[in-house]
Image (tube, rainbow, N blue to C red; front, side, top):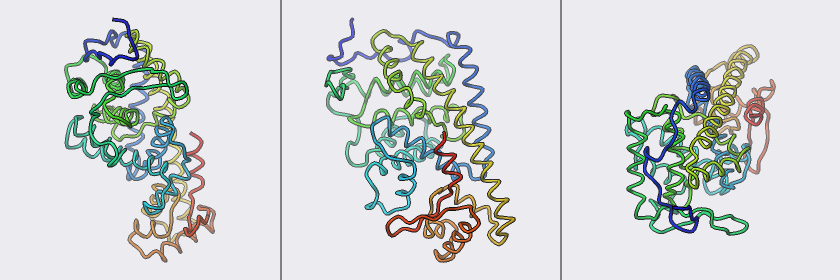
Length: 359
């Protein structure tokens, strides 16, 4: 039957609809798995990995949100993270919710396999109170400028059946696909189901990270995958559409595997630079401010590249005036830069911000 974007798509279940195998993508898969293995090792070398990787996860959160036309900057998000909820800008809240959704899903994955529970939990974190649960009505994807209908997802009454098939596929140990290829296939399927009224793209990209963690490919949900998609957004939508229209799995899978490859390389570089700067900073503090030579203090400046005395005081369990003294001393020796934003006195780990903004 010819594809008609105006008619709800009759989405085939997995894996029967997939007309590729590992052999079609051998060379790419070898490279992807090598880079992901090295990334896994790199992230495991960090002290307090999740704490130190928090800015990198925010960076991915920002890139994924930009795909959905939620526009802000890394500096604004890191600043707004320090402000009370009512004072945060809405676009920065959206990015921070993505970060929270990633970390919450990662914690849930320690107790439960990928399932309805985790999918709905991710979505609830992304869009709290606005659009809970799977959609109950038909929706469509249209060109924002011309209003042309590009795709009509399966009807609402088919969602649970298709999600159950998705769950079975991602949790199966009998599937003959390479785990990374399986993740790529499952990503298309989730986006084609389009089970929510809003937030499908962001939920789907978080699920990719969770699949790689569940299958032991990554130890932590750290892969700056949305950066590549942002640079090649039209191609991303084109290859997804070609699976729907032509069942063109090879083209789509090659694109997604290359995305993962390039971003594994970049994320690995990001972690190396962050870890190196962390060590250099500790040595510098040990030499210039020996009384402040505390790994917990320095790690706090990497978990929060933009920080306030109150936040540092909370992290170190000291009074904010003590934390303020620490920050002023670090600023005097050139490790931090001071900035004032309204009523807030901010201290910026400017060398770390250079690294985060470069990649």
